[in-house]
Image (cartoon, rainbow, N blue to C red):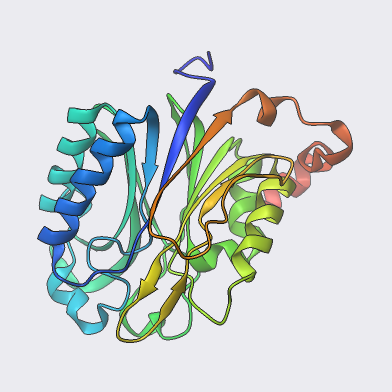
Amino acid sequence: MNGFGMDKYKVCVAQTTSYKDGKEYNLQRADEMIKEAAENGASLIAFPEMYLTGYTASRRIYDLCEAADGPSFEAMAGYAAENGIHVAYGFPECRANDNSTVYNSMNFISDKGEIIGTYAKSHLFAGEQIHFTPGNEFKVYDTELGRVGLLVCYDLEFPEPARRLGVSGAEVIIAISANMGPYEDIHEHFARSRAMENGAFLVYSNYTGSDNRFTYVGRSGLYAPDGSLQCGPSERAEGLIYADVDLELARNIDEDIDYLRYISDEERELYLR
């Protein structure tokens, strides 16, 4: 046991299409997938970036955004508690009833339906800067699933966000995405690197299918602390992908590839500024 919960458990990655038929439809789909994941023994299910609204919501996000503890959270928290499973999902977040400032965020909910944390994407891709405000906090949460950090899509393509989580003790990093063509291979390479250089499991959930703007590349999966692929990449098939986490692998890394071991206290402070 890790002092909070399990050392070994199953994760589920929801590789799904970016539907824009409304939050109600996507919540209904989430309910079905959460039930299936729990029935198959998963302790965590991760949905892609901006799952509640679809990635290409554009200006509609100002009408669709919600507080982190808003109505959609209440629904997802209910599904999590009913099925006894942790849930991570992307959504457009507004704060203090101000829907003029919107964040591309992820909620992380416990298996009891309680909010563990909300993370706002810090590195905005291409035209995202038009509608979203970047976040600037990188937190690691002590949970029943170990010490968990959160990232969203483009964050994965820079070493610093994951390294900040790594030096803060993350054993598991949940990264949700809307990666599209023609960048099929990019996130697979970065996911391997971010897992290995920080000695953490990396849970990666990406869209598949197409909307009116992008074709998404799938390839969701779980990467181990040594960079090895535990499941996936599942190309572009829609469905649920399962793999096992063993936190002992994150706590007993071969010292030759335990890169955090060789970071000085001064360097750690630099990363955490």
